Amino acid sequence: MDDDTRHEVDVDGATIAYRRFGPRDAPPLLLVHGGGAHGAWFAGVIPHLVDDHHLVVPDLSGHGESGRRQRYRPATWEAELAAVIEDAGVGPLVVVGHSMGGFVTAHLAGHRPHLVTGAVIIDTPFRSPAPDGKRPRWRKERRPHRVYPTFEEARRRFRYVPDQPVVDAELTEVIAAASITAVPDGFSWKADPQVYGRFDDRDTLAALARIEAPVAYLYGEHSALCDADTAAFLTESTPGDVESSRIDGAHHHVVIDRPDACATHVRGFLERHVRLAGRGVT
Image (cartoon, rainbow, N blue to C red; front, side):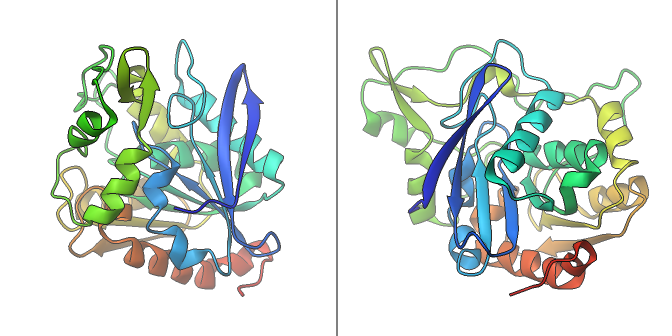
């Protein structure tokens, strides 16, 4: 994925890296990756949008090229997105969030509505809160990542979580390579293993109840985490307009399996809703 420019902004002591693609005067979009991922997860989507949109793609703290923290909180990730929007000078705008990035997008839209004119949320597993507000973790390991002697060995060990078939091998190579970093004695993963399981369903439900901007929800036909019931729950939990679509042939990592469909839905969403924010569509 050829990047335009790389930028950094400090947020509460952590360096947050983000990249910018496309014309600066085009309608802006903020693309937010999922847990344990990074901005390159959108490498297949970006070519479909970059000619006539200005794309801002951050790495949340604990991910990709951004710094790590002692503790991770949804409010902190939300603040990071707000800081990136301000630093890039692109708000208010439509935010696109995949998986965990959809949770962060919901918190941003609910708590800082002046920054978000619309949200496209992709395969984020919203659900009713458990009695204690906690959800079972499908990714439990918080041990230090294994260190591999060579980059090639680390690359061979790359897997999507939750597990799914590799639909696009070339795109997976790009994403895997961007997931690995050199460490003492070898190579390991960039993502901090402490980032998983950081959302309380009660807090997320409260954020959803405050979203007034229009929302599009996309979920994969073969997703292990989301389905039509998830979309219905989001619709019931959000007071504004919500439209939902199933992406055929996609698993949880919809932005990798069907980047073309993701881009098409984003374009359609902008055409239907962007003028609500006073922006034209190019």
